[in-house]
Length: 340
Image (cartoon, rainbow, N blue to C red; front, side, top):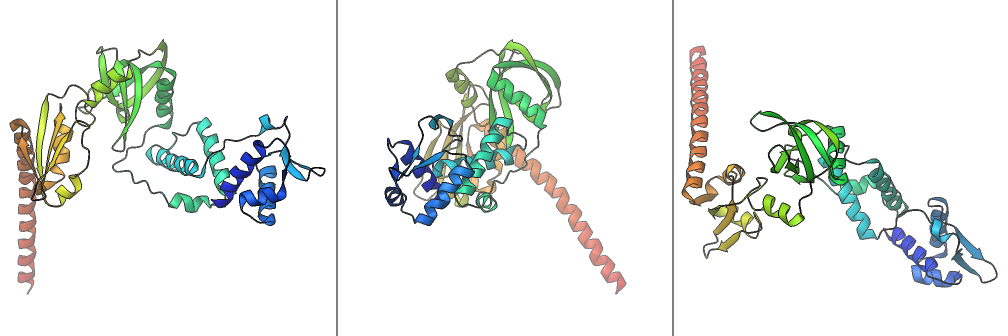
């Protein structure tokens, strides 16, 4: 990326100079050889069409005042380019096709800048690995329709199927897109229910943009409504979960934020206690079960009971599986014995 840094530095030097800049000053500022400067000069002139002139009389390089406004391109620092590269990787991995025409132009410009800086794009891409988990691909056209409605503040008519299989047609005012745990969601004001709702984008089979302007919710009202509860479930959080973690789970939970309003305590024995608000326990229970025997629900009683029922259900399932495996094993032994 050193060459890219020098491109930025050279552009800044010429842009801020009132008179032609001598070659010696350029080489000293860029800390490079004459040959390296010639290559940079060629890159700016041929790759980016930057009009750099040379004054034989004053023996220096300069931008003509009339040419400055026509310098094409967007200029970023090295760190900003790396950040854009990571953002591009995230977008492409999270939802192929999400790159709109305008963002694609920016992405191509970033590619060109990185290549000019001496970086190999395949190598750079290999430096960032995004691993989606249970990711569900969306229809790119549907995603674009929803995204444009969000940014253009337009209402939508959607055909929606919820997690229980219920199908409805709703008129909504999109508020914002949410990427959560490798799934896309849409926070929107539902005109059918006259309330804020969070829609799973994979549950939307059709989305049509309407001419009406979207009903806007203030950011503080939106945040209060959707961030009070635990996870993706919106609404007030009247309950507080009290969890006790031990073993490796305690190490993983220590310092982690499960909820902005959580409380955490590290005990002398290394175990960790966590208090966090929730409204709907479904997602919280799934997260609790991930830690197996390394977590205990200390309250409230209804949450403890729900987790116990889930574990008992799993035990029942695996009990029948274990019985079938035992029978197959006995049958195999019996067959071998008979053969002998």
